[in-house]
Image (tube, rainbow, N blue to C red; front, side, top):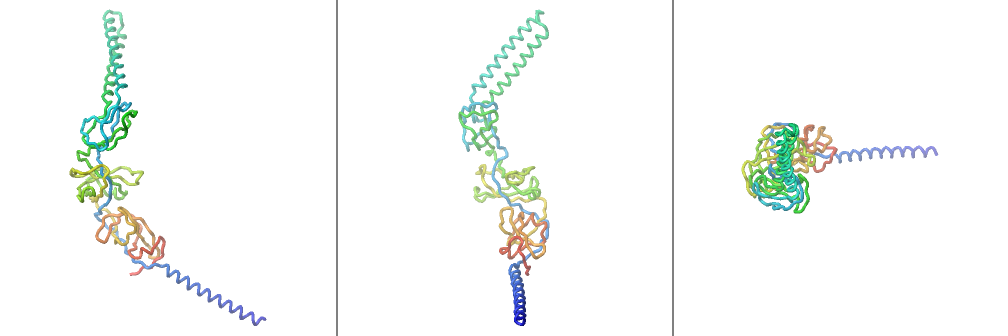
Length: 349
């Protein structure tokens, strides 16, 4: 029995060793299979005159919300959205009954205060009234006169008039509606005066690269391929909480016809000061958008990482990257289609 057991045990050990050897070979094959051959290019930061490409919408820098000073019942709104208006034109009116009654009450108060003062003055001359009584009557008369000035001033604001030549952008109330003091009724702009601007949103690095006065060009499908000259007229001092971008306004150099508030426009802005950026082959870019995209980078030539980058000027087969590659040494330029974040790679020439 013992002579039979020994060969069986020896055979089991031999089979186990073969199995282990076969497993290690399979694991090695799997590792080799998961290692993806790629080509890389080393990154060198350089000073460039990076063009900033962005988009936004046309508006004017003199949009105004109009409202009644005292409120009341809207008597009539004389314009509708899109109407052209001229400076001083009557746009809306509120029912004047209430403010008219207040003016009449104050006028009666002035008349009474005048009579009281005249009587006190006569009695003072006859040594019947004291100087204090005369002075009190004079103060009451002065107060009543100030009140009538205030009431007549308010009476003058029972109507809304255009503050400049332009267009009605929005109608925010209707006839017969009760509105309070300062409630928005109409929104107008000075579009007819040619004060057009393009509002765009930029990243923090793009925003910091610009200064007021930098040159820009603007195009829009509504202008049939016409290219407009513009310049940076204003930079916002805070971030837009909704879009997460910094606002920049581009003012048109010349007056242009055929624009309307809200039209979409594309802009190329040329910073006057140089900024550091990387230039990579266009093929290295993944999921490229208008201002950003993704690339795969490697720092050890063994694994890759997918990072988000900010894009600058586009050249023939290359593109400038203005942000996102500060901590990278190389970028993958071939084989990216087979990679995921953390993939193992083999660098080939």
